[in-house]
Image (cartoon, rainbow, N blue to C red; front, side, top):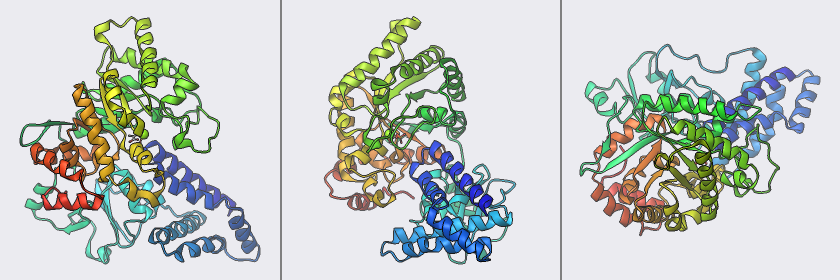
Length: 518
Ligand code: PEP
Ligand code: MG
């Protein structure tokens, strides 16, 4: 039994780290919490005691976890009730490990939609995403972690379709629309032609231009070379956010400058001439780096993270990263961007270091690398007019901006409503940042999850954003949608949205104006 417990715990922690690397911190936390259940002294004591009394190992584990599940099932809150499934899932995983049963559904031969009675979060996290392009299940709810995970992974999914297993047969043609929550059986060829581009089935390298001639750059977020290749294959206009910390995540030591040059070269080469924005290491808060252990903090999200960590503790690391970037930028279109900026002074310090690096490498004045900052701390958003003259561009990190604006931990699923992209307070702040940047002729993008939110698109266009950096599967869908929009209409709707009092009211406005997705 001990071996099975260790095996499941190891698998959960491994999958959790994979999600962490993919930027899905909240979802990684779900699997980590499941792993912790198997370390709980009360659970282990009860399980081994039952085993000693002759209870079979799988039942012993399930029974000792039951008090957890009971407590959750008794809650008034549907979110907590849905969490009981996570506990049952842990017990089921241990049972499968004890019986030596393969727990991840076998990958189909060709890209397919998986239809199942239910999928556990751990199974969802480990699906072969090159072959499983979406899934539909009989069980589950939108607030259960399987659905949350599917969203985080950009995997179209519809859960809780009663009778789906009986209705669909192996090899049948189906159309799954995760946004609308529908599964169409035997769709007509007209239906397929209509939905193929929005579902991201086709690559789309053409520019996204609105009906009235406004261009919106659609770039991708990337965590490494594979993502960069996926972005290029999807037809992205570039990489709007290269989360460089993920390049360093699975190592015990930090890469040398030359290793960094090689990594960056590979990423930029994958884009074949389209620009890449390297974000300097954003370590800390929910993204600790094993190779760079830091003292623990009471409030890590408010602690020494991102650019602060470099300026306060490790300028040597920033210098090495900037040197690598400058060397690659001499040959290829690479820009740099600093995360977690709160003051003008921080930007000046970072730029001074960049200038020193460029001088020492001998880069001529006119070939200087383009520099941007993330706008993800409310203080930076409020002072955008002072920051704009310092840089070439801004990118709004709406994940953190919403977290800090609403004082709502982004890893806490209970507070997800406060992180709704359509919250008018967030929209107002974004509008102010765009205006401040445009007054100085600086371009502004969004690289938080909001950029991939189909509801937010008309508003972001209307607020004047120049670039959106999205998930690779969303590129074709978003480009197609931009081409159907009118920027002047979106601008009027965005102005009206800023006067509304809730995200729900903004959603209703979009529906009334025929701008809801789908
Ligand atoms: C953000 O905060 O919106 C962002 C894009 O950065 P990260 O998610 O890596 O913190
Ligand atoms: Mg951030």
